[in-house]
Picture 1 (cartoon, rainbow, N blue to C red):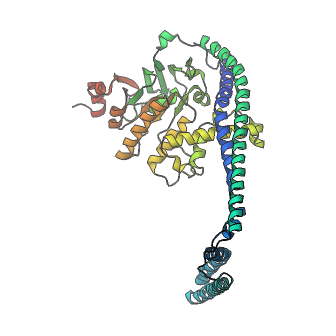
Picture 2 (picture 1 turned 90 degrees about the vertical axis):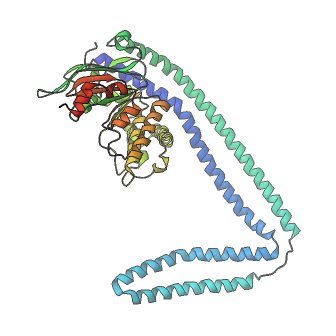
Picture 3 (picture 1 turned 135 degrees about the horizontal axis):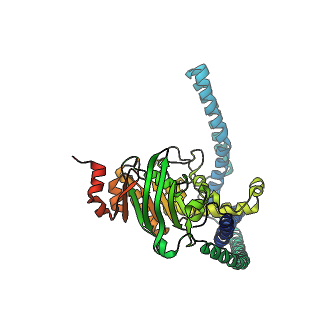
Length: 472
């Protein structure tokens, strides 16, 4: 077994993770860059279309029958005056409210009605003026010269917009090819370096493939965690297969959360080993890693209580879940460099995609405060997916949920397992959820193994029944 804090191991892992981060970014960025360019070009096209409409509007009005033209011109000038009066009317209403508090209802109403009457009179005077300027007539005469000029100019503007659209599309295609070729050349070198570093780490595996188990993703062997003589976890061993939903159950105080904390290195175990197959297929000993580095191996987790930042938006809360994967350094953060902005664009697009897949995209710009509890639970699950994990550890995910929300959560967990190719390891007191969701269930009591097997086998096990129900 590699020694804890082995310098060579830690250095090689950091180098490999840095190279892998560059590879992932280079693979994701072209699509994000294209989407951003399309948004920018769409805005440019909309601005040009608006300018075109403004240029064509006088010609279109001139090409209308005389009666319709007068009605349109009247409506335009009235609308301009109403827009000009919008802020003065709002100011009158605000002053009315202040006067009502200080001077009472009578003087406030008198002021409001007087000011609004002046504005209404101004609007009515303008309307009378426009009746004389643009009289209502029924003539349907249309100037053929004006109609031809409008049609000719409209065709020219359509051709200009079409040419602009084609030019922007060609530029995007050219930029896409250039970026893809550039990143492709970089990726060839990065992939060779990654394979070299990964091969070194494979040679440092703490146990053989046969000892670990070819289908396993996590192997807990003889795990012990003592607190001042209290045996919170006492010689516990189990294996979790890739792609399964594994449940850990037990009475309160059985040591379930302590097991989670030992796996994620929040606690340094008193004894035993925790082996894990990382995102690159290598077998590693989690006790060789510090807590912040565990997430880079492909393990994410939630906690018993919702741990969201309530003054940030939902989208920003998801971005917190990927902070360990930023390639930019402190200098990039200070100046907000182009490199940092590109990374933010990639991670933001990833967050939007995850929120959309979990059905909570509509909340992305809202703060967590005031949102339904079930939505907040989904947000926590979404945040775990930001690091592209291979295994997600859920600590009582259904706590505080009603029956409908629990049923919805069950489907979300299955979706995450199937669509995101994740192994799920959960602790839960809701036995209906555990028995309907889990492929394998492990029951513990006072830190010791009671039984492990299918949900049906656990339900029928007399030791489990005794731990939960007691005996006469």
